[in-house]
Length: 169
Image (tube, rainbow, N blue to C red; front, side):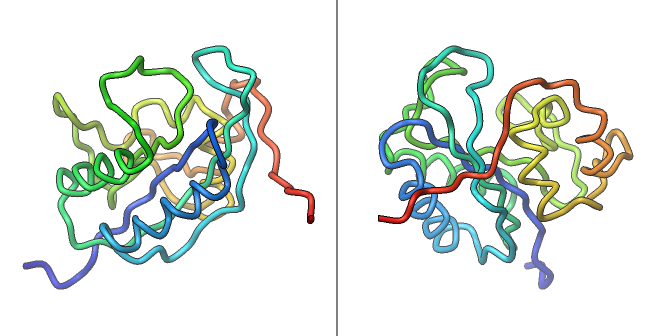
């Protein structure tokens, strides 16, 4: 067994139900089922990407320490998503209570039928890059060799991403 944990970056997203509560619950489940969350971004509100919906998303990036393999992390992510009612056989782009994506796993490059690391479209999506840039601007993409800050500066995505502020009751 490896004695040094892997560094994992995840993106959480929700656009149905009590989105903020669901992000917080998912983060707790990640801590329990995958490993300690060592950093997290602010929560960002974002326009849907790849489909139309009147519901905006809430997104948050996490840095997680884990001893699990990428495949085991993915299995646990699927279990966490199921607790929110997510079924993976849905359309790839649709409204959902919870979506968790693996963005990076150390500097691993993995392409299989079931898993692609780093996430193949992260460099094209501001809703991923903005929260990730908040917690890891100097993280280097193992394929492009660019930092997250550089990828964000180069990103052509025009969808709006803004910090989420919930009015106090």
